[in-house]
Length: 267
Image: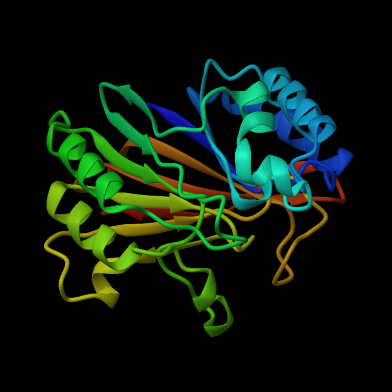
């Protein structure tokens, strides 16, 4: 079994010490194998924000990390930096802002950088990224849970969030479904949910899920939902064998702990 902690949109610069402490305790309890950080690490891509973010991530002590930037991780007001060196500050803290991969016997995660310096908040997945990810999915081992991580969502629950959809998502979901993806994991809109895309679209040849995370640490919570993270577990026993499970953990401010509030089996 592999355990993944998905932490999204911490927005360092607006982080809450209470939530930080609670997440540290959750990591000590769960001992995840992978920390999947799906963007908007900082609020304004300031060096001090990246420094605080890196210190916190290192403190969690998770053995493996897979990190992608969000739109907030590119400077907004430092125009010259945005145009000439959009990822310089990010890369000093977290390494190259490029697509990444994590693999175990029962898990394959492909993380794609969907930010663009010429876009303010919207994300984009290129044809090259779509095809490269599809070809890697096709080489996955039998029995692996196959995840793709992006920052912006590929499906939303509210009409107001339609403008936040990842550009190119429709083509990407179709192609990745053909290649064998199980779920597409994201953040950006600070709302946690799990959606069966195969029930929304009749053009998908296999079940595909959209897994969204809330904001892990920021004061910028939405929809009345507190700070929230996802825990993804492979190889969970079910009546029909084994399956992957996505758990939503929300912070309980009365006790200063993250508590499991929902669980979805990815059939």
